[in-house]
Structures are given as C-alpha cells and as structure tokens.
Length: 301
Picture 1 (cartoon, rainbow, N blue to C red):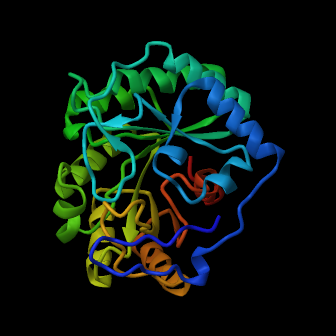
Picture 2 (tube, rainbow, N blue to C red; picture 1 turned 90 degrees about the horizontal axis):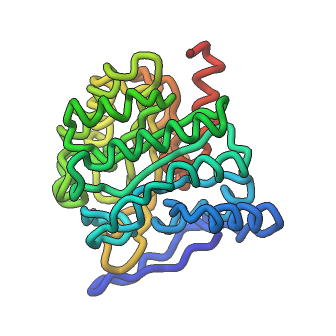
C-alpha cells in the first residue's frame, strides 16, 4: 500500500522513503474478509486507526477487532481513532465477535478497544465477555487482548485476566520524555504498572507491549523504555515506525531505516524479551500469530 505524503500546517511535507512504499493488495480473500467484518458490525482498528497493513492482513484473512465502539474518550496525538462521547456498549457484540472469528477461521485473534473512561468498569466486563465468546466459538484460537490501561486498577485488570486470554498486550507507545505530549491522558508509569499487574494476574499467559519510533526520541531513551518494559517482565515487544495519520496529529520527526530496526531488535533480544518484532511496518497486532509462535518454538507454554 503506498501511503500519501502528509503535510503538517507550518511544516513542509516529509516524503516517504522507498522502504515505506508497497503495492496495494487486492483479491478475493481481501473482499471476503471485508464481507465478514461488515456483517459482524464490529469495528476494526485496521480501519479506524488507518493501519498501513490493512490490505496485506485482510488478504490473509487477518483482522484486529475493536470492541466497545469506535469513539474513544481519550485524545492521543498519534492515533486516528475518533475522540467523542461513546455510545453504550452493545450487549450482542461478544456473540457477533465470536461468530466473525469463527467465520474467518482465525487461529490467533487480537481484540482491542477504545478507552472507555466513561464506564464504571472502563469496559472490563464487556471485554471479558468478548474473550469468553470467542473462546466458545473457536476453542483452539489464541486470544490476544489489547485494552486501555484501565487506570491500572486491580479489580478491573482482574476481571479481564480472569477470562484467561493467552496474551495481555498494552502499548507503552513512546519514551518517557514524550509520553505527556503524545499520550496526554495516559501515564508512562501507569502503563508499566498495568503490565506488571497483568503479569501477576495471568501467570499462564504472556504480556506484550509496543513502541513507536520516529517521534523525536533518542536511541538511549528508546533503550531505557525497553529496559523499563523488561523490568515488569514483559515477554513480547513490537517496535514500528510512527506514521502521521492526519495533519492534526504529531508530525514524523524521522524515518528510521530498516537496518536500524534490526539493531533495535537485537538490542531488545539481548535484554531478555522472548520475542521481538521490529520493522517499519510493524504494529502491535501485525503478524501477531507468527510472533507468538516464535515463543512456542522456544518451548514457551
């Protein structure tokens, strides 16, 4: 998929380097995936977040579902998901999600959600119901959840972890210095605390987090963020290039070349991460099944 050059008001457009251009995938499988998604009525982060990997993933019958609606209560400067007053959760969404997962024949599903700070339980109960519905519809499917931080509240994290997802994913997104700018309604330390608690609450599973590069961070700051994630026993790390979704979002400060992503991956593996995906197009859910399989191949449970 060839992405458009995006200009930020008052700044010249930054042209995409060759390694960030790809042909647009087409074909029957992509159309079939789109049909299943449309019939389910469940949103996907692929569309809402304008993911550059949509064509590739949907051509492989992969989709990342986004529950609890398509309106977020937070306004992050990197994210294209709409910020607005959310609608009430749809009671039949877990069933529809389970049916869509089965229809796609997914062996690994990623379920994410908008932040729902408006709800008393921040959506934890609905999230857990979705996990159980997918488990019932596809008993052998690996389930990866990617919730908001739920303010790292013990009782809310426990509700979701008690549904026994295989992987608990929560993204740090950026380095500590830039977190207040890029994620003004989140907290760098709170993300680490949520991951630490999830690790304890999900002893038989894995924890995962992701970082973006190209926002102006230094390599040492990035290394420190990775060390911080390992300090709370995060098992899986993803590192990808930030791409500005609209002119209203944070600008790209730098396009990181592929060779540097390989260096970052090697550095992360040396820190003890069980699996690392690092590359220009890597996103938190991109090739999630392959990343998980890398752990299984090493003898992980």
